[in-house]
Image (cartoon, rainbow, N blue to C red; front, side, top):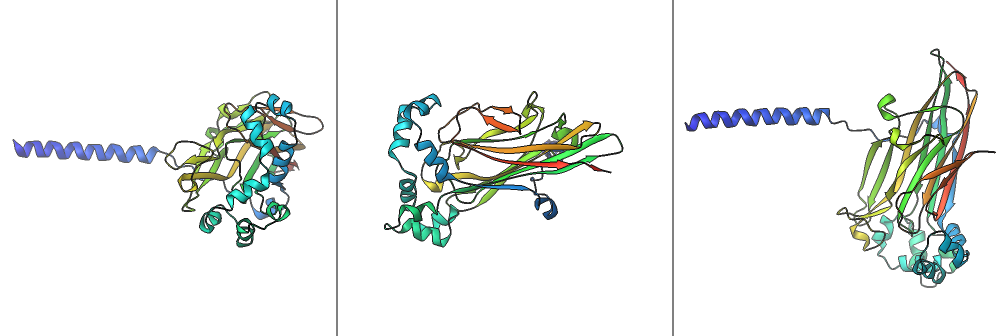
Length: 314
């Protein structure tokens, strides 16, 4: 009887192992979004934005204007009473190792650590974001379709002082239809996170589907994400640096098609940076004379980069 039980147990174990193998074999691991070739990147539009400029612009707005954008009285009081330089002086209290994990150079750390640094010197350590957009191709093929792919990338050189909920989007001119990941295995986005205590980095790639497609506006929105979250998974914009992962970089690629010939198209990539916690971020578009992606919920700043491309025949 005992031998029979052992045999049955072994058969069940083998069956379970086989099922597990099939499950993992069928689970697709998406490759991260990689940048285009150097030749394509040579004609990309690259914009660098300074968080100080954005904060200063926000601080100069009237309390009524800030309230109309959704800021609470507590938010407004904090904005009006806190300078960007004071935020950097506060950050300078972190350890040297922590500041390196934030992305600061030795020269910037020396400025942040020096109590006698001037405001101008502190501004040189301001967080900067680079936004890159490029229409990688616009090709008319023998099947009479015109195909295109658009690449968007954003990266914080140092971790920004404001770490709430952000979003991004790509929009395009013309009548081209969005091709979701299930149609071509290209439309997807990748987010890179860094642990502020260990500097360990991890990434996750997600397919872009028809759910991300803004039908009437000819745009695709990357879902809102928390710029900073607890390593345990609980989200929060502030706290001890050691317990937080920060999304410091992202990239997206979308594929488009049009039946017929298009001689020219323009695209805009945009990244929305928020200084208050929000949810339900949506976008709208305005067209002439060029595309402009507008984000709801009154973002701290919208960082944009436009690009265009003419058709090639194949």
